[in-house]
Length: 219
Image 1: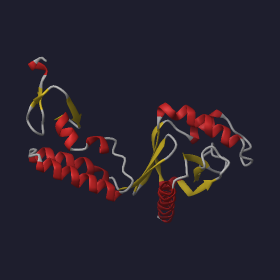
Image 2: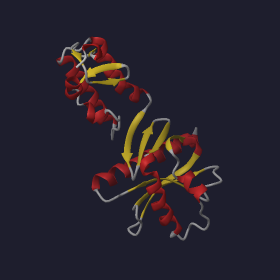
Image 3: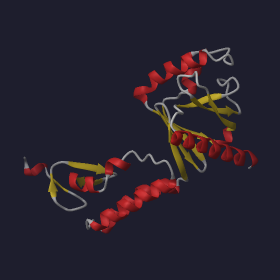
Image 4: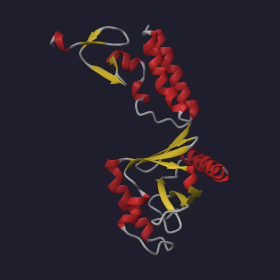
């Protein structure tokens, strides 16, 4: 081990070799473990309450470990940034994650599994009698790459479509006001709907989005 390669942990101030960086802060493996970083590093929380509980836990641990006050504040700020953006909840789908905020929602599609998801959805929609015209360009529009932000004002409604015979037995369908690729609707979010807790989260997500669309249309 070369002493020149070692750096100071911003939490405990020990000289260490193996570190993890969080927004410019450097932590040793011991501090990272104590902070339960693996539980929140992706910042995917099902609700505001879950986010706040994790934030408070991180703040408590950092104080107990004797971190500098500024480091503790910076850690807390990571969570508060999401609250400032109006975060409401998130829900997981098939290779997708939906994040709902006060003024908009986002859908993130895992690039690695996108091709598999597109193949599955293609087979599903081609068997749907309501889809008369279907091509790869439309599919790319239905399942865009990466993380896309959507404004509530651009949509008329959202609904949940379920079916036992579908490979993905839950489809969240967004009716777009002016989308030439949509036919009547845009299918953005695909999920499995088997577990009770998944049903509850998706049902609630659709309800929240519908309420925000209605409020946006009235504005």
